[in-house]
Length: 431
Image 1 (cartoon, one colour):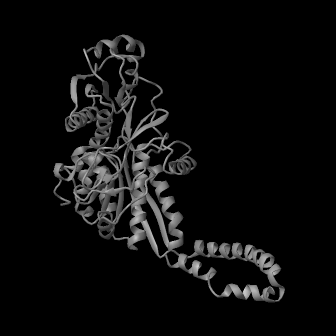
Image 2 (cartoon, one colour):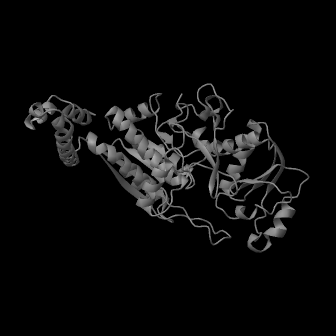
Image 3 (tube, rainbow, N blue to C red):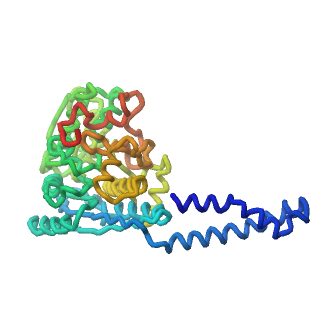
């Protein structure tokens, strides 16, 4: 902040009348005041600002902030549709944008951010991988952004070498990581499944869609999401009138119009909720249900951390910067990684420290807020390390609503109506 204040003082200092006197302002009257002074300032200020900018960019940084990025790439199971594709570099591109955004401000404050990546390909021996990560963590207190499955994240966080690190979970939505399996050195920028399902349940309540037909996929993530949906429906006083597991061997490309109506046959329901995180069959459910009802969950109305259709709250700027960097649109996984990097940047700026313990203390305090282009400032819950954030309810071409919805009140912040509140959390490591 010193350099910025110096610039302001320089251009409002008593030196300005010197320019006026040298230009003959006192001798030439109002014509000189109205004409020569603006011309001189118009020519001098850009030169001075240009010189300052060049100096700022060449000034040696006083703080070097290296973020360690760790990712285990997973093998996506085969799905029915050839149109389902997962972006290249998903996750790490978001972290890179966050580092770029930090450096945009950091170069004026003597800060230099960098990202060191450890990306493990599918099939990497877990023993070899964990040993390499262990060696990296042994280098000293680190700031780490991880894209790891929940079990791998817990194993890494429990290493003695990670005790003095601050780890950001930017991928896993598992509720257990925010509850009984929580770790004191892990913060979560990815929303939990319960946050996503609560966003949906709030919308159902608002629309008076009280009776829900739940279709559960066959994979582990689908079942975890379905469990979160059931909890949310109970939490908001909604009913599950049908709860079915999907037909594993159904080929929807040929038989959706005949299979889905029979599968969703019931006397009543207001909405169909599908849990299919790998996009295997969910896209074939809309418009094929027995009753003409909306579809939500993994198809139709979808709860997300981020989507290309978000344009309000200055989001178009973030979308544009990411597209320029990655030559594609930003996903929820990219956003969670961006938020992790930006949270570090905000904390370093406010504390002038790179110590993970100092940064964590600031992030967990009431002083921390991060502008996340989602309509509400982001912060961290002190009882389980989860980042508070709105959940966007979207379809392919537009935002339908942003949860928490109006009318869902909370004693502290309406954002805490999404996911596990303090009294509901089994995580005792942040208390």
